[in-house]
Length: 284
Image 1 (spheres, rainbow, N blue to C red):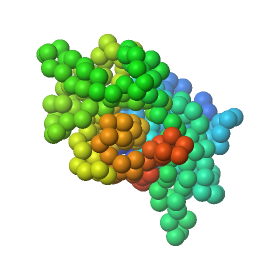
Image 2 (spheres, one colour):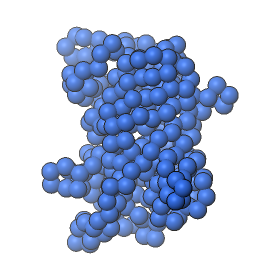
Image 3 (spheres, rainbow, N blue to C red):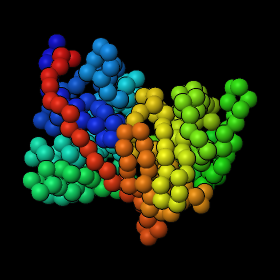
């Protein structure tokens, strides 16, 4: 079996295994099996999935990400900051801007460097939120889908606001975020019949007009310490429900992200760090 190089990185605890496939786009043959094998935290390297950094004919580079269950996701806000960090610190990107092709379109990223020229943080243009029900997709008509009731098997009910940031999210506002909500109800909601492509579920508590606490059950991965698209979707949902200003800090289990939904161009901007963990080799 071939031995390949990998890099482990995380964006506020949302950790992936990264492969530099720029010179060899076909380096990882079976992406689903590789993601399942290497993501295992007991028998693999451990992570929320794998990310391939690839050449692109449309942008500077391309990113493909696969969840720990092997499924491919359109976009990951934390992973794309890590890709920007990798490209910056490995010399692929010399300036302060990089365009990365994703399954949710091309994302433009502004890089802030430290005094030594290394990556410090990234501001990602996450694009315009998709608010029309069938386009999210959710089997509910409406634009936007705000405060829609959704029932669980035990007869209990939540009210959700649905947003797509290139991948689908259901944001639920609660007074207190509990393990049972995230780990039990989130898991059930992920595969609810209302969501034809499954759903990422965010449970959010409003602290004040510029601060929000959030936990997330990610489609195909379970609870993660952070979710960039989920934080962006939650920011949009907060504004739609009149709960916060357009600029806010999202407090996640792994750290904080700055979210802004611009009133000028309708685009969402996410700012946060990325952290290198280690380089290594692995047999696949």
